[in-house]
Structure formats: structure tokens, C-alpha cells
Length: 351
Image (cartoon, rainbow, N blue to C red):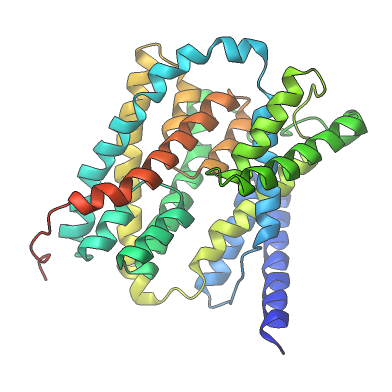
């Protein structure tokens, strides 16, 4: 079997496991079956030794749906509220700084990772982008990937519980209108906005092309009065499915030693980030800068795609949430390599 055929076979196996997970979650009546079902099914099988494979460009294609959903939510009223978002966005640099100065010592001194790995594992950016920069700087890619994958897995798993307990969000609700109730022309325009916006943004080398491009394209269509709906529920479910696979499959090949130490480091670091996030969320909500629900989904660094999915389910302000996650990731990606050069070389961590 050629490498390409082997990859296709692994992706087929992964998709089958994910479908089974979604089916079990749906049968048991558990929340977010199309997101958490595939995620935990792939996680358990990966820990059991299954060789899983991410969906590659197919997964990226379905992520464009999130950008379309955010763009379709932009109306003249949302545009008029842009100055209100500026104060909240201005807190993102401080948010990143606090995370960096608390997370780095934890990973460096307590878990004894090397300096480069500790630094990039502490940065709350996009997993793929941080791994690329970490690799160039000489970080341990396995540790880096597992720490960030654990951050996303844990925060995405805890977020629905808090949404349900604090804001009484019904996580079993349909994430949109059925496709049969949306004019076919609008669905066609949404697909065009997703794929076209992604490809144009990619060619222009715009950061976060799979979400930013479709969001801008869909916003133009929305403001022009050509679309009046978000993507149908079926498209949102498909997007959740592929995001669940992407998170769970990251644990393929994890050893017992990595589970004992590296994943533990990821769990402890995630809890630290969660506590810092809750402090900022509480401040933003109490200061009246943004409603608590929106602040929660905007400042919890569980992955921009995953948080947008939860925002759709919760009926939150998608534009506010997307802008905060994009701004956070852009700041980390652009500034982290520059700041690292200024970092003094410290003593070896204790053995």
C-alpha cells in the first residue's frame, strides 16, 4: 500500500470512529454530540494505540463555515457598536502578558521543560502556528503539541458545563435553521463566501484565512441584504464533527510516560489559563464592558474554532467573540518570536 493509500485508510478509520462517537453521544442524549462525541471517541482510540489521521484540507474547508456564520451576523447595528468592542479588545495584550509571565515559570521550573519549549507552550495562540514557530526556534514539538492540544481539549470540555450551569444554555438545541427552511440561493452564496473568501484571503496571505476571509465576504453579503440567515444547522454540525476529529486525533501515538508528565503539564497549565481567563471575564462583565456570556466565550483560550461553535449554540454575539480570538492569535503569532529574542537565557531548570 502506497503512503497516500495508507493515509486515506487512516482517515477513513478516523472518520468511522468519529461517527461512532457522535452516534453514542446522540443516543445517550449528551450535549454537543457532533463536537464532543468525535473528540472523545478519537481521544480514547488514540490513547488505545489507534493510528488516527486528521482530515487535512477537508477539515479546513469546513472551518470556513464558522467564518461565514460570523460574517452573516454582522449588521448595521453590529457595525455601530464597534467602538464598544475597542475597550474590550484593548485588554487582550494584557491578558496575553499575564498568561505568559505565569505559565512560563510553571512549565520551566515545575515541569522542567527546556527554555524554548516552555516559552512557546505558554503562549495562548493557535496550535498550528505556535508549533511552526516553536519548531523553528528548536522546541520539543511533541511536548509543544501535547500541551496545546490538552489546553484546547480541557477548556472545550469544561466550557459547555459552565455555559449550562451559569447561563442555562441548552446545549442540545439545533445550532440554526434547517437547510430546508433557508432559500437555496442564500446557501449557495454562503458556500461561495466560504470557499471564495478563504482562497482570496489565502492568496493575500491574510492571517487566519479560513475564518477571516469567509467572515469578510459574508459580512459584505449580509450588509448588502443578499443573505439574511446564518449557515444551516447541518453545515454547523458538519463543522463541529471535523473540529472534534482535529482535537482528538492530536493524541495519536501518546506514550504512558507522556501521559504521566507532558499531558499532566498540559492539564495544570490549562487550569491556570482557565483561572486567569475567569478573572478577566469577571472584570469585563462587572465593568459593563460586555455581557458575561460574550466575555466568557471571547476570553477563554480554547481555540477560536471551538469557541465560535459554542457561541453559535449559545446564541452569543459572534462578531465580538471572533474578533477577540483573532486579535489574540494575531498578537501571539506576530509578537511571540520577537519577544522570545529578548528573553534572557536562564539557568537550567532543576532536575
